[in-house]
Image (cartoon, rainbow, N blue to C red; front, side, top):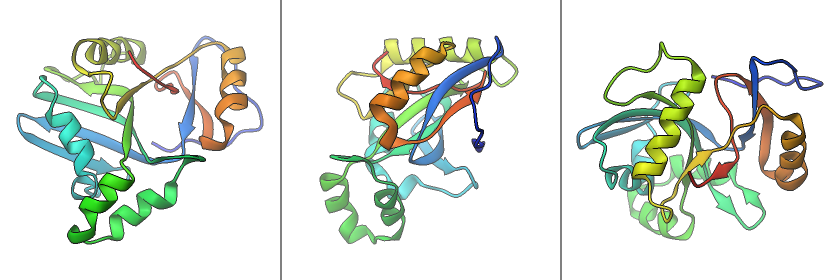
Length: 182
């Protein structure tokens, strides 16, 4: 699940590119009314991000698993420290933090919907995720679909436009990201 640093972008048909946002990697599990946010290390993030839970609860599909990134937008990019602070505050202060500094979720892979998609090629899962966003996620939501590209020129535009918000630039033909609305 971790991106790795390299000196140059890999090139080839098997590669797709995405920015790796400065946030928390997060799996979203939904089974009916049960919604669970899980960190890369397997820890629950559910109680720290009630606005994300509410955004997913508002969607019609009742069963899915998504892979993506929790991020906290600020005037100057994203705040990793803001995400970390969310994990440290008590419930009395949480409501104020959610109101003052709401988080967002940037999805870049769909691992399951009504069926397990893990055995499917990434490009099939990506198309399924795009349809999911087109059909079910309102534009006013704090949930975002990550864009992907096979074109290095597009990556160079991302780096120039949003570089301060990035923590990396690509993943092998499995993931890909710039927040867009499906």
